[in-house]
Image (tube, rainbow over all chains, first blue to last red):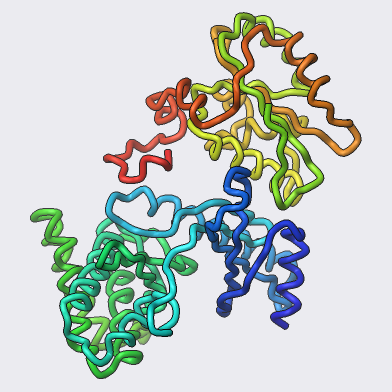
Length: 261
Length: 168
């Protein structure tokens, strides 16, 4: 199945573009490549790029499938393009987009962690520090993660699928700068509900993948989140109160709202 | 002169030439109906980098190959692809050269059938454009672009400061 998609991608990109599959989700396959989609002067450099491909789903009517793929690819690209312009918010740069075939080209972020802990996303990072989880580096990194989410929500955007593997850490001297990735379920939204759900989903993700230290981790993330809002003055503090109130409500009832009555 | 291809579309070659001290922009404009089949003339005041130009070329090829051609030919399609809107006449007006343009970028797509000859192309171009050919590079482009004009055309919503200066 996967091989079939890889062959399809290779034939679409021609043999001039090298690809290495790195991850597969329910909706898309992610490849890395060393070829820039259009800039000739990057030829021969060791720069890496990400290709995100949404393969057609055979259980859908081909026409419906095409429109869905097109809309989702465009939605994600537009969102990324807008987010990239927000000062202080870190997301991968959009390089190219082919909505008709479901391709997005992005800047490659992150690196391999030392000691064989795998790729530098937040999940692997926390596992790497599992023996010594309460050090300053972990605390500072998680606060920065919270700040990123706060900034995202303050600008009325929602991620839709916040997990510790959708947060990539990029080395910044001796510290790490968290970048948010995968806006496939992202949206523009000023609803406190969506923001509350975002926070809840991340809290649950941390709770299930890093149970031992989750409590402290979540506190640090929320500290950073609050900081980002409080920096916006009284208006920010007011909004923060609304979001936090809804977050508590979501926590009590779960992600899905009850549709009774 | 730059002759290049996009990795994904190895069969479509295109060339890019940058001219400065152009004296006959007005004349070129009056001949547009005849010239536009073979060239696109773009105003470098709106082009801040090679990347911007190449991304438009890439988008052109994606649109033409996988969607549809919205204008008469590849050259004009690329001018449309530079524009943030899908309004064709608006794109030509803004990104095309003006009567008083003293620099211009000339873009030409070469189809498989038309044999590419740099020398020939150079001669043809120099008979059309009265100006000095310079290299199509970021350095040269940076001399001509007008940031406030780009902001006016490309960013309708005013940005409150921009942390990523390379992403206009």
